Length: 75
Image (cartoon, rainbow, N blue to C red; front, side, top):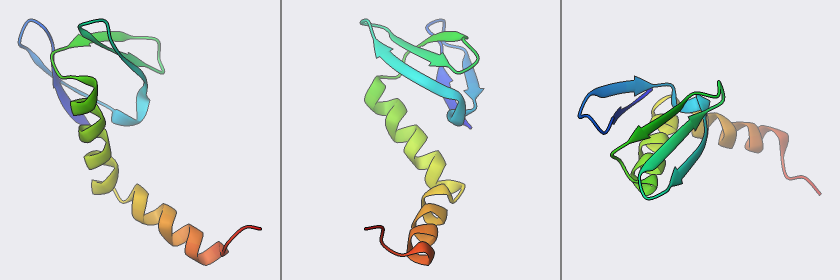
């Protein structure tokens, strides 16, 4: 989960795994896989950093590397 700021200043926590797209139009619009859209103050690059940090914190990156090591290289 990541916490973002709506344009009115309220903070909301969203499931980072449900983010489908992030657009800067110039406001940042986050579209979730549910179809819900949110306009937030964070930039697209800030959102990418938040999502990457969240994914690392739950071990998804480590699990992917471990899986690659177990399966070996694909040829």
